[in-house]
Length: 95
Image (tube, rainbow, N blue to C red; front, side):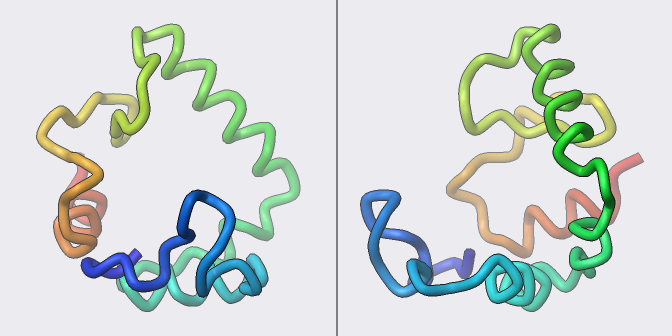
């Protein structure tokens, strides 16, 4: 989401993103982050991968959201209030 949260859903259900397709949201995320994401969403078993990562996180004591992990390591310095540019930089420079 942009730093001003202008396109975020309001109350998790209404607002400008309500009519957006998943492809619209992916395009916006790519634009904000500078990271190409669309190909990852074409992975046939992406849902299985996400479930595996969620299970891995729970097994490692992560039971609250948001908690951020990069390459299997918790990133306590990252938070949901951080600018998108900070997230993108952390992802780009993760070991």
